Amino acid sequence: MSSAVSESAEGLVRRHVRDQSWERFGNVVLAGSPLTVFRVTDAGGAVLDAIERGEPVAASALVDRLLDTGSIHPVPAPPSTFTVDDVTVITPQLGGTASTDGRIVVDDGSDPPLDHARVRLDTNQGPAAARNAALPLVDTQLVAFVDADVDLLGDVGIGSWLDALLPHFDDPSVGLVAPRVTGEVGSPLDLGNQPARIRSGTRVSYVPAAAIVVRTAALDAVGGFDERLRFGEDVDLVWRLDQAGWRCRYEPTSAVWHAPRPTLTDRLRQHAGYGSSAAPLATRHPGKLSPVHSNGWTAAVWAALLAGHPVVACGIALGTAARLAPKLPGVPATRSFKLAMTGHLLAGRQFAAAIRRVWWPIVAVGSLCSRRFRWAALASVAASPSTAAADVAYGWGVWAGMIRHRTVGPLLPRWRPWPSRR
Image (cartoon, rainbow, N blue to C red; front, side):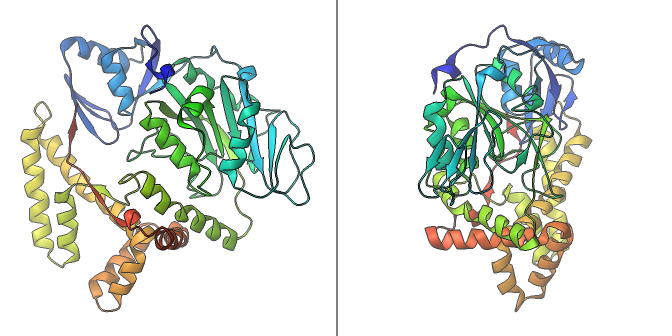
Protein backbone atom coordinates (compact mmCIF):
# COMPACT_ATOMS: atom_id res chain seq x y z
CA MET A 1 0.00 0.00 0.00
CA SER A 2 1.22 3.49 -0.80
CA SER A 3 2.60 5.55 2.04
CA ALA A 4 0.08 8.24 1.13
CA VAL A 5 -2.74 5.87 2.00
CA SER A 6 -1.27 5.06 5.37
CA GLU A 7 -1.14 8.73 6.32
CA SER A 8 -3.78 9.41 8.93
CA ALA A 9 -6.87 11.43 8.09
CA GLU A 10 -7.54 11.76 11.82
CA GLY A 11 -9.18 15.06 12.66
CA LEU A 12 -10.60 15.52 9.16
CA VAL A 13 -14.08 16.97 9.69
CA ARG A 14 -16.55 16.80 6.83
CA ARG A 15 -20.21 16.79 6.07
CA HIS A 16 -21.54 13.65 4.40
CA VAL A 17 -24.68 12.72 2.52
CA ARG A 18 -26.43 9.40 2.93
CA ASP A 19 -26.61 7.02 0.03
CA GLN A 20 -30.08 6.50 -1.42
CA SER A 21 -30.14 2.98 0.01
CA TRP A 22 -29.78 4.22 3.61
CA GLU A 23 -32.44 2.90 6.03
CA ARG A 24 -32.12 3.19 9.77
CA PHE A 25 -33.85 1.30 12.57
CA GLY A 26 -32.43 2.66 15.82
CA ASN A 27 -28.82 1.52 15.99
CA VAL A 28 -29.17 -0.71 12.93
CA VAL A 29 -28.53 0.67 9.45
CA LEU A 30 -29.04 -0.91 6.05
CA ALA A 31 -26.94 0.95 3.52
CA GLY A 32 -24.25 0.78 0.91
CA SER A 33 -23.56 -1.10 -2.29
CA PRO A 34 -23.79 -4.02 -2.00
CA LEU A 35 -26.32 -3.55 0.78
CA THR A 36 -24.65 -3.99 4.16
CA VAL A 37 -26.04 -4.33 7.70
CA PHE A 38 -24.42 -2.11 10.35
CA ARG A 39 -25.06 -2.45 14.07
CA VAL A 40 -23.58 0.37 16.13
CA THR A 41 -23.18 1.36 19.76
CA ASP A 42 -24.97 4.31 21.31
CA ALA A 43 -21.91 6.44 20.54
CA GLY A 44 -22.10 5.26 16.95
CA GLY A 45 -25.78 6.13 16.96
CA ALA A 46 -24.86 9.72 17.83
CA VAL A 47 -22.60 9.78 14.75
CA LEU A 48 -25.47 8.49 12.63
CA ASP A 49 -27.73 11.22 14.09
CA ALA A 50 -25.23 13.90 13.06
CA ILE A 51 -24.95 12.49 9.54
CA GLU A 52 -28.73 12.40 9.18
CA ARG A 53 -28.93 16.04 10.32
CA GLY A 54 -26.34 17.01 7.72
CA GLU A 55 -23.79 18.05 10.34
CA PRO A 56 -20.01 17.64 9.90
CA VAL A 57 -18.48 14.63 11.64
CA ALA A 58 -14.86 13.87 12.41
CA ALA A 59 -13.04 10.96 10.84
CA SER A 60 -13.54 7.75 12.83
CA ALA A 61 -13.56 4.00 12.36
CA LEU A 62 -17.33 4.04 11.85
CA VAL A 63 -17.23 6.90 9.34
CA ASP A 64 -14.41 5.13 7.54
CA ARG A 65 -16.45 1.92 7.25
CA LEU A 66 -19.51 3.83 6.05
CA LEU A 67 -17.40 5.54 3.41
CA ASP A 68 -15.75 2.29 2.41
CA THR A 69 -19.08 0.59 1.69
CA GLY A 70 -20.59 3.57 -0.13
CA SER A 71 -23.14 4.11 2.64
CA ILE A 72 -22.23 7.80 2.87
CA HIS A 73 -20.43 10.17 0.57
CA PRO A 74 -18.23 13.11 1.57
CA VAL A 75 -19.27 16.65 0.68
CA PRO A 76 -15.91 18.42 0.73
CA ALA A 77 -16.22 22.14 1.21
CA PRO A 78 -14.12 24.30 -1.10
CA PRO A 79 -11.67 25.86 -1.17
CA SER A 80 -9.33 22.89 -1.31
CA THR A 81 -5.68 22.91 -0.37
CA PHE A 82 -5.20 21.99 -4.04
CA THR A 83 -5.63 24.45 -6.91
CA VAL A 84 -5.51 24.19 -10.68
CA ASP A 85 -1.79 24.91 -10.44
CA ASP A 86 -1.41 21.51 -8.77
CA VAL A 87 -2.90 19.74 -11.80
CA THR A 88 -1.21 18.73 -15.06
CA VAL A 89 -3.66 17.91 -17.88
CA ILE A 90 -2.79 15.18 -20.40
CA THR A 91 -4.74 14.55 -23.60
CA PRO A 92 -3.98 11.57 -25.87
CA GLN A 93 -5.00 12.24 -29.45
CA LEU A 94 -5.06 10.52 -32.83
CA GLY A 95 -5.72 12.86 -35.74
CA GLY A 96 -7.63 16.12 -35.69
CA THR A 97 -6.21 19.37 -34.35
CA ALA A 98 -4.12 19.49 -31.20
CA SER A 99 -5.45 21.61 -28.34
CA THR A 100 -3.36 24.58 -27.23
CA ASP A 101 -5.13 25.40 -23.93
CA GLY A 102 -2.32 24.39 -21.59
CA ARG A 103 -2.64 20.64 -21.85
CA ILE A 104 0.13 18.20 -22.62
CA VAL A 105 -1.09 16.73 -25.90
CA VAL A 106 0.28 13.33 -26.84
CA ASP A 107 0.20 12.57 -30.57
CA ASP A 108 -0.58 8.86 -30.71
CA GLY A 109 0.95 8.20 -34.13
CA SER A 110 -1.14 10.65 -36.20
CA ASP A 111 -0.44 10.97 -39.91
CA PRO A 112 0.22 13.80 -40.58
CA PRO A 113 1.65 14.64 -37.14
CA LEU A 114 -0.31 17.00 -34.90
CA ASP A 115 0.90 20.55 -34.59
CA HIS A 116 1.85 21.69 -31.07
CA ALA A 117 1.81 18.19 -29.56
CA ARG A 118 4.44 18.04 -26.82
CA VAL A 119 4.87 14.27 -27.02
CA ARG A 120 4.71 12.14 -30.15
CA LEU A 121 4.58 8.36 -30.56
CA ASP A 122 5.86 7.14 -33.93
CA THR A 123 3.11 4.50 -34.18
CA ASN A 124 -0.39 4.33 -32.78
CA GLN A 125 -0.16 2.47 -29.46
CA GLY A 126 -3.49 3.25 -27.83
CA PRO A 127 -4.63 5.65 -25.10
CA ALA A 128 -2.92 3.80 -22.23
CA ALA A 129 0.53 4.09 -23.82
CA ALA A 130 -0.13 7.67 -24.90
CA ARG A 131 -1.07 8.77 -21.39
CA ASN A 132 1.92 7.00 -19.85
CA ALA A 133 4.25 8.64 -22.37
CA ALA A 134 3.47 12.06 -20.91
CA LEU A 135 3.92 11.11 -17.25
CA PRO A 136 7.67 11.97 -17.16
CA LEU A 137 6.63 15.60 -17.85
CA VAL A 138 4.32 15.73 -14.80
CA ASP A 139 5.74 17.61 -11.81
CA THR A 140 2.47 18.31 -9.99
CA GLN A 141 0.73 16.39 -7.20
CA LEU A 142 -2.32 15.69 -9.39
CA VAL A 143 -2.73 14.73 -13.04
CA ALA A 144 -5.92 15.01 -15.08
CA PHE A 145 -6.57 12.90 -18.15
CA VAL A 146 -8.99 14.49 -20.61
CA ASP A 147 -9.75 12.87 -23.97
CA ALA A 148 -9.69 14.96 -27.14
CA ASP A 149 -13.43 14.40 -27.76
CA VAL A 150 -14.42 15.69 -24.32
CA ASP A 151 -15.87 19.19 -23.99
CA LEU A 152 -15.28 20.86 -20.63
CA LEU A 153 -18.59 22.65 -21.15
CA GLY A 154 -17.32 26.08 -22.08
CA ASP A 155 -14.55 26.40 -19.50
CA VAL A 156 -11.29 28.03 -20.47
CA GLY A 157 -8.26 25.77 -20.02
CA ILE A 158 -8.86 23.16 -17.37
CA GLY A 159 -11.38 25.51 -15.82
CA SER A 160 -13.99 25.16 -13.14
CA TRP A 161 -14.89 21.51 -13.78
CA LEU A 162 -12.15 20.81 -11.24
CA ASP A 163 -13.76 22.88 -8.48
CA ALA A 164 -15.87 20.02 -7.14
CA LEU A 165 -13.15 17.40 -7.64
CA LEU A 166 -10.04 18.88 -6.02
CA PRO A 167 -11.41 19.11 -2.43
CA HIS A 168 -11.73 15.31 -2.34
CA PHE A 169 -7.95 15.06 -2.48
CA ASP A 170 -7.67 16.77 0.91
CA ASP A 171 -8.32 13.23 2.17
CA PRO A 172 -4.93 11.55 1.71
CA SER A 173 -6.58 8.17 1.04
CA VAL A 174 -8.27 9.42 -2.13
CA GLY A 175 -6.35 8.41 -5.26
CA LEU A 176 -8.82 9.19 -8.06
CA VAL A 177 -11.88 11.39 -8.57
CA ALA A 178 -14.06 11.39 -11.67
CA PRO A 179 -16.76 13.79 -12.89
CA ARG A 180 -19.97 12.81 -14.61
CA VAL A 181 -19.46 12.23 -18.35
CA THR A 182 -22.63 13.23 -20.17
CA GLY A 183 -23.35 12.49 -23.81
CA GLU A 184 -25.76 10.36 -25.82
CA VAL A 185 -28.80 8.87 -24.08
CA GLY A 186 -27.94 5.50 -22.58
CA SER A 187 -24.20 6.07 -22.87
CA PRO A 188 -22.19 3.62 -20.73
CA LEU A 189 -19.96 6.57 -19.85
CA ASP A 190 -22.75 8.41 -18.02
CA LEU A 191 -22.96 6.89 -14.55
CA GLY A 192 -25.80 9.00 -13.19
CA ASN A 193 -26.32 11.91 -10.84
CA GLN A 194 -25.58 10.24 -7.49
CA PRO A 195 -22.11 10.31 -5.87
CA ALA A 196 -20.42 6.99 -5.24
CA ARG A 197 -17.40 5.08 -4.05
CA ILE A 198 -16.02 3.40 -7.18
CA ARG A 199 -15.45 -0.30 -6.68
CA SER A 200 -16.05 -3.52 -8.58
CA GLY A 201 -19.42 -5.10 -7.89
CA THR A 202 -21.01 -1.90 -6.59
CA ARG A 203 -23.48 0.61 -8.01
CA VAL A 204 -20.60 2.45 -9.73
CA SER A 205 -18.03 -0.22 -10.50
CA TYR A 206 -15.88 1.77 -12.94
CA VAL A 207 -15.42 5.21 -14.47
CA PRO A 208 -14.19 6.09 -17.96
CA ALA A 209 -10.83 7.81 -18.38
CA ALA A 210 -12.50 10.30 -20.74
CA ALA A 211 -12.04 12.72 -17.83
CA ILE A 212 -10.47 11.79 -14.50
CA VAL A 213 -8.12 13.31 -11.95
CA VAL A 214 -5.56 11.08 -10.25
CA ARG A 215 -3.12 11.63 -7.43
CA THR A 216 0.31 11.35 -9.05
CA ALA A 217 1.69 9.32 -6.15
CA ALA A 218 -1.18 6.83 -6.49
CA LEU A 219 -0.62 6.53 -10.23
CA ASP A 220 3.08 5.91 -9.71
CA ALA A 221 2.35 3.36 -6.99
CA VAL A 222 0.35 1.13 -9.35
CA GLY A 223 2.58 1.66 -12.39
CA GLY A 224 0.27 3.85 -14.48
CA PHE A 225 -2.03 2.48 -17.18
CA ASP A 226 -1.61 -1.06 -18.51
CA GLU A 227 -0.37 -0.47 -22.06
CA ARG A 228 -1.39 -3.97 -23.14
CA LEU A 229 -5.05 -2.92 -22.99
CA ARG A 230 -6.48 -1.04 -25.98
CA PHE A 231 -9.88 -0.88 -24.25
CA GLY A 232 -10.70 -1.17 -20.55
CA GLU A 233 -7.44 0.38 -19.41
CA ASP A 234 -9.45 2.86 -17.32
CA VAL A 235 -11.44 0.09 -15.58
CA ASP A 236 -8.21 -1.77 -14.88
CA LEU A 237 -6.58 1.34 -13.39
CA VAL A 238 -9.49 2.03 -11.03
CA TRP A 239 -9.57 -1.57 -9.80
CA ARG A 240 -5.81 -1.66 -9.24
CA LEU A 241 -5.97 1.60 -7.29
CA ASP A 242 -8.79 0.17 -5.18
CA GLN A 243 -6.85 -3.04 -4.56
CA ALA A 244 -3.84 -0.98 -3.49
CA GLY A 245 -5.94 0.74 -0.82
CA TRP A 246 -6.68 4.04 -2.57
CA ARG A 247 -10.22 5.40 -2.49
CA CYS A 248 -11.73 6.28 -5.86
CA ARG A 249 -14.70 8.64 -5.92
CA TYR A 250 -17.38 9.58 -8.44
CA GLU A 251 -18.45 13.22 -8.11
CA PRO A 252 -21.37 14.03 -10.46
CA THR A 253 -21.69 17.66 -9.38
CA SER A 254 -18.85 18.17 -11.85
CA ALA A 255 -19.83 17.26 -15.42
CA VAL A 256 -18.18 17.19 -18.83
CA TRP A 257 -19.56 16.36 -22.28
CA HIS A 258 -18.37 13.42 -24.37
CA ALA A 259 -19.16 13.71 -28.06
CA PRO A 260 -21.02 10.62 -29.31
CA ARG A 261 -19.90 8.78 -32.42
CA PRO A 262 -21.49 10.37 -35.54
CA THR A 263 -23.22 7.25 -36.93
CA LEU A 264 -24.99 4.21 -35.54
CA THR A 265 -22.37 1.95 -37.11
CA ASP A 266 -19.60 3.87 -35.38
CA ARG A 267 -21.42 3.68 -32.05
CA LEU A 268 -21.99 -0.06 -32.33
CA ARG A 269 -18.34 -0.56 -33.28
CA GLN A 270 -17.38 1.44 -30.17
CA HIS A 271 -19.56 -0.76 -27.94
CA ALA A 272 -18.00 -3.86 -29.48
CA GLY A 273 -14.61 -2.41 -28.64
CA TYR A 274 -15.70 -1.93 -25.03
CA GLY A 275 -16.82 -5.56 -24.97
CA SER A 276 -13.48 -6.77 -26.28
CA SER A 277 -11.88 -5.61 -23.01
CA ALA A 278 -13.95 -8.02 -20.92
CA ALA A 279 -11.73 -11.07 -21.47
CA PRO A 280 -8.38 -9.47 -20.58
CA LEU A 281 -9.99 -7.71 -17.62
CA ALA A 282 -11.50 -10.99 -16.40
CA THR A 283 -8.07 -12.58 -16.62
CA ARG A 284 -6.46 -9.78 -14.61
CA HIS A 285 -9.32 -9.42 -12.11
CA PRO A 286 -11.03 -12.82 -11.68
CA GLY A 287 -14.69 -12.61 -10.74
CA LYS A 288 -14.92 -8.83 -10.92
CA LEU A 289 -16.40 -8.65 -14.40
CA SER A 290 -19.14 -11.20 -13.79
CA PRO A 291 -22.40 -10.31 -15.61
CA VAL A 292 -24.48 -11.27 -12.55
CA HIS A 293 -23.74 -10.74 -8.86
CA SER A 294 -26.36 -12.63 -6.91
CA ASN A 295 -27.00 -15.35 -4.33
CA GLY A 296 -27.95 -18.93 -5.03
CA TRP A 297 -31.53 -18.66 -3.73
CA THR A 298 -32.34 -15.78 -6.06
CA ALA A 299 -30.82 -17.69 -8.95
CA ALA A 300 -33.00 -20.68 -8.03
CA VAL A 301 -36.12 -18.50 -8.17
CA TRP A 302 -35.42 -17.37 -11.71
CA ALA A 303 -34.20 -20.80 -12.82
CA ALA A 304 -37.52 -22.26 -11.67
CA LEU A 305 -39.42 -19.61 -13.63
CA LEU A 306 -37.36 -20.29 -16.75
CA ALA A 307 -38.01 -24.01 -16.34
CA GLY A 308 -41.76 -23.34 -16.30
CA HIS A 309 -42.42 -23.90 -12.59
CA PRO A 310 -43.85 -20.61 -11.26
CA VAL A 311 -45.29 -22.26 -8.14
CA VAL A 312 -41.87 -23.59 -7.21
CA ALA A 313 -40.34 -20.17 -7.89
CA CYS A 314 -42.88 -18.45 -5.63
CA GLY A 315 -42.30 -21.03 -2.92
CA ILE A 316 -38.55 -20.48 -2.96
CA ALA A 317 -38.98 -16.70 -2.96
CA LEU A 318 -41.46 -16.71 -0.07
CA GLY A 319 -39.44 -19.23 1.91
CA THR A 320 -36.16 -17.31 1.63
CA ALA A 321 -37.93 -14.04 2.43
CA ALA A 322 -39.39 -15.54 5.59
CA ARG A 323 -36.00 -16.89 6.65
CA LEU A 324 -34.28 -13.54 6.24
CA ALA A 325 -35.98 -11.84 9.20
CA PRO A 326 -34.16 -13.83 11.93
CA LYS A 327 -30.86 -12.96 10.26
CA LEU A 328 -31.55 -9.23 10.61
CA PRO A 329 -32.27 -8.60 14.30
CA GLY A 330 -33.33 -5.03 14.85
CA VAL A 331 -34.91 -4.74 11.41
CA PRO A 332 -38.72 -5.02 11.35
CA ALA A 333 -39.83 -8.39 9.99
CA THR A 334 -42.08 -6.76 7.40
CA ARG A 335 -39.13 -4.72 6.10
CA SER A 336 -36.90 -7.81 5.96
CA PHE A 337 -39.58 -9.67 4.00
CA LYS A 338 -40.04 -6.80 1.55
CA LEU A 339 -36.28 -6.44 1.20
CA ALA A 340 -35.87 -10.08 0.21
CA MET A 341 -38.75 -10.04 -2.27
CA THR A 342 -37.53 -6.80 -3.83
CA GLY A 343 -34.07 -8.33 -4.16
CA HIS A 344 -35.48 -11.30 -6.05
CA LEU A 345 -37.36 -8.99 -8.42
CA LEU A 346 -34.45 -6.64 -9.04
CA ALA A 347 -32.17 -9.59 -9.75
CA GLY A 348 -34.34 -10.20 -12.78
CA ARG A 349 -32.92 -7.01 -14.30
CA GLN A 350 -29.42 -8.35 -13.86
CA PHE A 351 -30.29 -11.61 -15.57
CA ALA A 352 -32.05 -9.76 -18.40
CA ALA A 353 -29.02 -7.51 -18.90
CA ALA A 354 -26.71 -10.53 -18.85
CA ILE A 355 -28.78 -12.19 -21.57
CA ARG A 356 -28.68 -9.08 -23.76
CA ARG A 357 -25.02 -8.33 -23.22
CA VAL A 358 -23.05 -11.58 -22.88
CA TRP A 359 -25.30 -14.64 -22.83
CA TRP A 360 -27.26 -13.87 -26.00
CA PRO A 361 -25.33 -16.31 -28.26
CA ILE A 362 -26.15 -19.14 -25.85
CA VAL A 363 -29.79 -18.06 -25.56
CA ALA A 364 -30.01 -17.67 -29.35
CA VAL A 365 -28.89 -21.26 -29.84
CA GLY A 366 -31.26 -22.44 -27.13
CA SER A 367 -34.11 -20.55 -28.80
CA LEU A 368 -33.83 -22.80 -31.84
CA CYS A 369 -35.29 -25.69 -29.88
CA SER A 370 -36.85 -24.18 -26.75
CA ARG A 371 -39.83 -21.87 -26.44
CA ARG A 372 -38.72 -20.90 -22.92
CA PHE A 373 -35.40 -19.66 -24.25
CA ARG A 374 -37.30 -17.60 -26.82
CA TRP A 375 -39.41 -16.07 -24.06
CA ALA A 376 -36.26 -15.31 -22.06
CA ALA A 377 -34.73 -13.56 -25.08
CA LEU A 378 -37.86 -11.49 -25.69
CA ALA A 379 -38.16 -10.57 -22.02
CA SER A 380 -34.53 -9.41 -21.87
CA VAL A 381 -35.03 -7.12 -24.87
CA ALA A 382 -38.35 -5.83 -23.51
CA ALA A 383 -36.58 -4.90 -20.24
CA SER A 384 -34.45 -2.32 -22.09
CA PRO A 385 -35.32 -1.96 -25.78
CA SER A 386 -33.41 1.32 -26.16
CA THR A 387 -30.07 -0.34 -25.32
CA ALA A 388 -30.62 -3.70 -27.01
CA ALA A 389 -28.55 -2.97 -30.13
CA ALA A 390 -25.64 -1.56 -28.13
CA ASP A 391 -25.82 -4.48 -25.69
CA VAL A 392 -25.67 -7.04 -28.50
CA ALA A 393 -22.69 -5.18 -30.02
CA TYR A 394 -20.99 -5.23 -26.64
CA GLY A 395 -21.61 -8.97 -26.40
CA TRP A 396 -20.13 -9.49 -29.85
CA GLY A 397 -16.94 -7.85 -28.60
CA VAL A 398 -17.02 -9.96 -25.43
CA TRP A 399 -17.17 -13.22 -27.36
CA ALA A 400 -14.47 -12.10 -29.81
CA GLY A 401 -12.24 -11.27 -26.84
CA MET A 402 -12.96 -14.58 -25.11
CA ILE A 403 -12.00 -16.52 -28.22
CA ARG A 404 -8.82 -14.47 -28.59
CA HIS A 405 -7.80 -14.84 -24.94
CA ARG A 406 -9.20 -18.35 -24.46
CA THR A 407 -11.26 -17.65 -21.37
CA VAL A 408 -14.94 -17.85 -20.39
CA GLY A 409 -14.50 -15.60 -17.36
CA PRO A 410 -16.85 -12.83 -18.61
CA LEU A 411 -19.72 -15.34 -18.85
CA LEU A 412 -19.56 -16.69 -15.31
CA PRO A 413 -21.90 -15.34 -12.60
CA ARG A 414 -20.56 -14.41 -9.19
CA TRP A 415 -22.39 -15.90 -6.22
CA ARG A 416 -22.24 -14.27 -2.82
CA PRO A 417 -24.15 -14.48 0.45
CA TRP A 418 -26.64 -11.81 1.43
CA PRO A 419 -26.67 -9.71 3.47
CA SER A 420 -23.05 -8.91 4.12
CA ARG A 421 -22.42 -7.74 7.66
CA ARG A 422 -20.13 -5.19 9.29
